Amino acid sequence: MMNALGIDHGDKRMGIAGGDALGMMAHPLEMILAKPFENFLKRLEEILAERQVEQIVVGMPRNMDGSFGPQAVKVQEFVALLEKSVTVPVRTWDERLTSVAAERALREAGINAKDAKAKVDASAAAVMLQGYLDSLSM
Image (cartoon, rainbow, N blue to C red; front, side):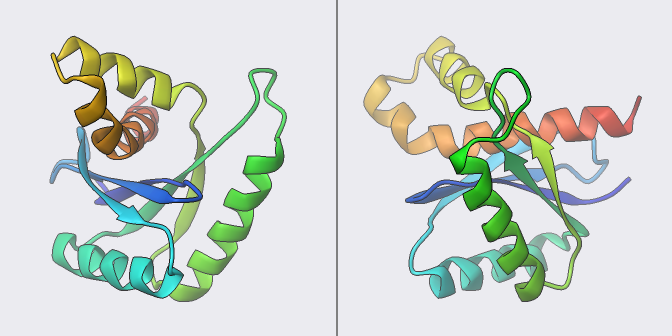
């Protein structure tokens, strides 16, 4: 199995999730501020080295009908920049409704709205990465 890292792209914050050693379960790791990009990239490179990541999976926002909207263009630009900046392969994965699922899971876990806001980005990255990991085992 592949050691993957998930990124939930945002204009202000990037949610980061990691897969377990078996490549079966995704877990929220942290949130990194998106700007300045150099600081984001420095922390990302530290995580890539610490976790020996073999692939990055970036959530691609799609409309419910499957089409791409304005946010998808931003993600495509981010992915192009990321591919030039890291040595591991980068791919995208459909992230429709991951934030909704992450918010619901945090609420069900008894985490209040104020605390959940700080955790939803990494949790959304974990939901997205879990979908990707599940697809590999099919």
